[in-house]
Image 1 (cartoon, one colour):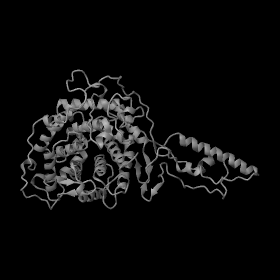
Image 2: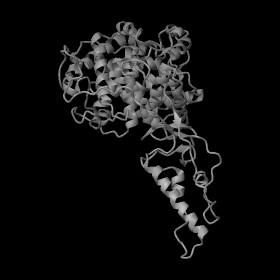
Image 3: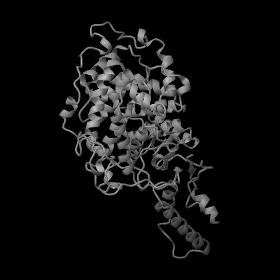
Image 4: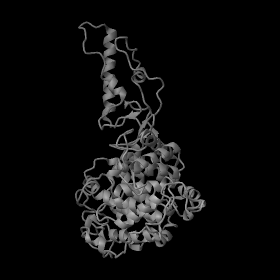
Length: 542
C-alpha cells in the first residue's frame, strides 16, 4: 500500500511561539492564518485560477518572513528590541533552510524505500532476447506501412453501409437496431473497462481481437526499454539521455515536463496489467507513482499535478485512477480524487473544454486527455460530476464538422486526422451510439485514411476508435497497424525494444520515450480497454 504523509503548514507565528519569541509590535504586522489545514491552498494568480508552480518558488511564510520593515535601524536600541532582532534573524535562517531543502514546502510527501533495485542494463547490451530475428536498428522505410499488408479499403461506410443510406443525422439520442439498449451496455463497461488487463483475460482477448505472439513480444520488449530508462528518483524524462542510458539511444525529446514523461511511461505498464502490487515491474511502477505523488500540490480545488500545462494533469490523472482501480489501494484514492477534482475545476466554464491553463477556452488535444482522465475516474468509482461531462459535449459540438464526423482543434476549420480521431473517441465515451450518423461517417474516414507512418498521436486515438467499433473496419485497421509497429521496433543495442518516428510536433518533442510509450499502448489495445459496444458482465470488473 502506498502511504501518504502530508506536511503540515506552519505559519511564522507558530515557529515564533516554538522559539518563545515575543509578539511582533504594531510596526511590523504579521500575516495571520487561523488554524491552517494540513494541506493548504497556494496563492492564486486570479480568483479561481491557480498559478503554475516554479521550481524555486518558496512558501508564503518564507516570502512574508523576508519582507519585514527592518530597512532602517536606530543606533540606540533597547535590549528588548535587540533580543527580538536576534530571534528574527534566527527565524530568517530557519526559513531559508526550509527553502533550500526542495521546491515543495507544502503538498504530499511520499517516501519510497525500494526493497529491490530496478535492474540496469550494461552499456550496449540488447534488451531483446536471443532468437529475435526482426530488423535491427532504425525503423523501416515509410513504405513499410503500405507494404506490410495489402488491404482493400472501401470508401463506403463500415459494415457495408452505403453513403446514400438514410442516417439519423439529426437525432443523436435515437438508437438504431444494432444499438438497442446501448446505455445499459455503456454502463457495464465503465465498471469493467480494465478487466482485460488481468493475466487470465489477456491471452483470450489477444487471440480473439487480432493480436499475435509477435505483437505481445513487442510489448514486453518495450516495457524492458522503458524500465531501463527510468531515473533514480522514479521519474522518466523525454530527454532519455538524462537517465542511465547516458546517450546510448538516439533521438532524445525536448519536452521539459518530467511529470508528463513519467505518467506516459507508466501507462504501458498499467495497460499490460503491471501495478505496484502485482506483476514483473512492481518496483518500477511503485517508484513512478511515488514520484508523481511528490509532485502533487494541494489546492482548494484538488491536487494540482502540473509541471507545465494541463497535459500533465490529464496524463497523471489517468495513471492515478487506473492504478487505484486496478489495486483498490486506499493510499491512492485521495490523490486520484484530488487529481479529478482539479480537472473539474480547470474546465472552461463557458465552452466546456480544457487548454494549457485552467479556465482557458479549450482545444481538442488537451480536452481529450482530460476526458479520458474523467472516464478513468468513473472506472475507479470516484466522484465525477455529471455537469462536467455534459459541458465537454458542448465543447465537442463547437469544434465538430459534418455533424460530428470530423473535429477541429479550437474550431471546425482547423480539423485534421489527429483531432478527428480524438473527437470521435470522446463522442464514444460521452454516449454516442454505434448507429449515430456522424460517428459512422467518422469511422469511415479513419477506415479510408488508414494508419499513419509517423504520427503516433493520431494512431493512438484512431486505433482505440476502430477497436471500440469492431467489425471489418477494425480488422483491416488492426492488421496494418499491428504489423507496421512489429516491423519497425528497434532490435539493436540499447535501443532494442523502442520506437522512433520523426514527426515535427509530438514525435520530435517527445522523442524516443514518447514514441515507445504510444506504440506500446497501441499494441496493448486488445486488452487495455474493453470495447465500449461489447456486452461485458458486471461480475468481470476489477
